[in-house]
Length: 363
Image 1: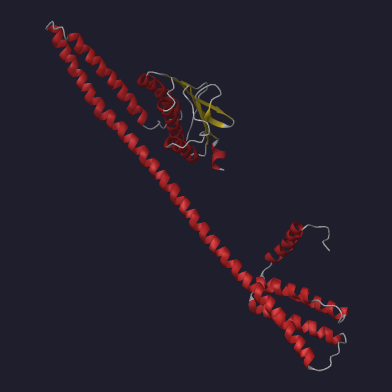
Image 2 (image 1 turned 180 degrees about the vertical axis):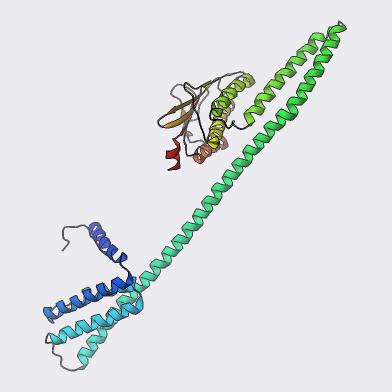
């Protein structure tokens, strides 16, 4: 008889029924099982000797073995054996010799005891597996946390090294080039005062040095962090687009229709680095001539988009296998943003990074 339920449905109902016992304390569970066993004994007595209730007696014994332990389960084994044998005797059971009821009592007690032992062993095995699962989960959680911490530290080290390199370029190289340009100007003026034909060449060298100073300053600015003001990301991306155009002699422009203010300096830093990496990939790998960096804000969050007209990604490699793509993806993951990269419908590559509102990123 299946009561119109499938095997999975019956298992679900049985699990629901067992969940009732999970809510009871041992002090409350013992009286419930005693009452249930006594009720089964009364029903067994009125049913007579022709009806067996062995399976029903096993239920409170199994519950006791699972939730209360072996000693209490043995007590229920004794009680169930007493009810079963006593009910048969009171119901009028007759035996040829006195050894038959003694044998039946011993056998029934042995069956109950064996069932209680099996349930208790399963409970011990269940607890051991749960304990191992918790230990492994804790170790895995700790390993993941340690790995994430190491990745963050490596990323932080990389950021510090970039900032240090940018500062060194600004303080050392730019100052050296400035001194060189000043010396070149003095030389050009001296050659001009002497009427030398090399005065124009000296002036041209000075202009080249001044261009080098401008490029070095732009490079140092690109390696520096985003300024901590809320509009620092917009200013940094605009300066980066301008310096990229000057340095690589391509068209790189920044588009931001409405002001985008970001209070989280770490998020702004990562978005800036993602844009840097995307532009670098477009130039080095995509050989792009036109790049657009877009920044906008909506109800979905802050959207950074980098478009180029380069060769684009190879088919089947939209997930990216290079270090740069993995770093961009990881940066987006750190700030809770959604990162995507793919081929444009026309030509080139499109990189998008959507930073959700702060409350969604936290959740």
